[in-house]
Image (cartoon, rainbow, N blue to C red; front, side, top):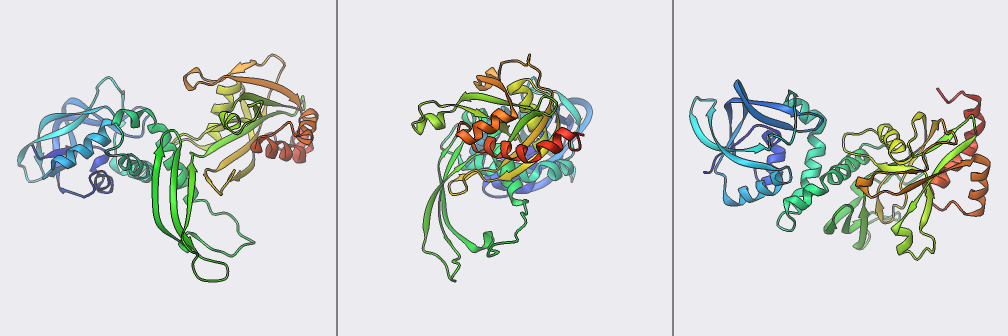
Length: 377
């Protein structure tokens, strides 16, 4: 059968074209006795049988074996399966076709789905994520991709967020992305994190283009850090956990002191991430969030932005000592430290993680204002 009915996100021609590598012939079509709804709490639709309802979509004809393989790769990551149906085209013709249907037990139906709303809210992110998924076609199974699809989407959101980030520029040459000529990009490793190898030429300050330069970039999704601060007790909460990056670098004591931190999930705001992570890692409710900075931790080779906050919190002596999510393999210990002690640790070099150093320095500068209450609302 060479006809497929698309009722959801693949109705969006740019996404279908990215998945297939081409846009097939499409005509409007409907599927009787089916209802398309948002999957509750998700960013995609689901379809289910519903007497008297009509699912609107498009019918793609001329589907090839290669098209099917690419669709199975993409849809397989979402546990969809093909089923035979009969659809009606806009001209009234009845056509036998196939449709990808979800596992009925996988999700709960929410409100009626709107393609326009989905394009507005999720279209660009989905295209960005789909490009990474389809870049793995022929090299990884849908199951392995599904296991880390949340991180793929978080990386996609990070790229879109950076594309919309317009930093003030009072000093600099004023160069932009247009001043880099990208010759090639390879992705030899794509898992929870990704490695990308770039070959590019760039505009020189003295004029002209550089010779080709080759650079490897470590890609990670953007993350938030939050340093909980209790202005009444004048103390902060630091977390401690093992860090294999420090271990790999030869550190004899790779358990490091840090602020609370976590990846910004797709569709999640920076502030929501900060509050969620404080609860998950330390059992702390955050009140007002005060921005410390938005910065690249190491832009020479790491593609990631960190957004740091100081968060106002109640930090009594009886806070949980151990936190973290078992599902994420976290083993986290909390430490309540006076701000004076934290400043001494900063001076001694005991604080060795950049976001913590930056956040403690910011807090030292704004300590009196925070304790006076003018920033705690």
